[in-house]
Image 1: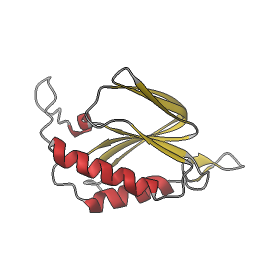
Image 2: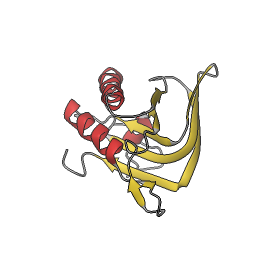
Image 3: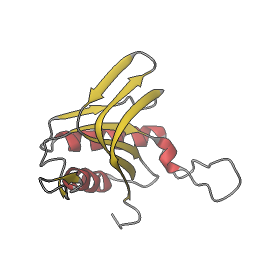
Image 4: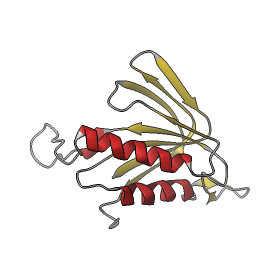
Amino acid sequence: MRAVIQRVHRAEVVIDHKETRKTGRGLVVFLGVMQGDTQKQADFLSEKISGLRIFPDENDKMNLSLEDIEGEVLVISNFTLGTDCKKGRRPSFDLAAAPKEAETLYRYFVTKVKERKLNLVETGEFGAHMDVTVANDGPVTILIDTEKIGK
């Protein structure tokens, strides 16, 4: 699994130009499910993201986690994180999991995040067209690839 995580003041997603979902202070997680990913990666990633100490404490040091601040999170499925740009100019999406498999693991990941001590968990809509607005705080943007850390 690959996740691009952004610390935010607020975020919103508009799904298929109709439905809007919003969050406040917390994180936006763009989640890409790769071929061969399992629930083990989703378990690891949900725990890692919830516990990342990337929010400022009273001394303005990144020392607090999403759980510590009882923050909010917006999880957006993003198959384009499964790209390979090594050859040519057109990205290959061969690394991304098949849609049915990816949706199952995406939903599982969201369930695991919802089990954490958080104020609000919102999602986009798997496979839908989404317009995502992010007010990045910092900016703080982190990439986690479970393949690169052996999970």
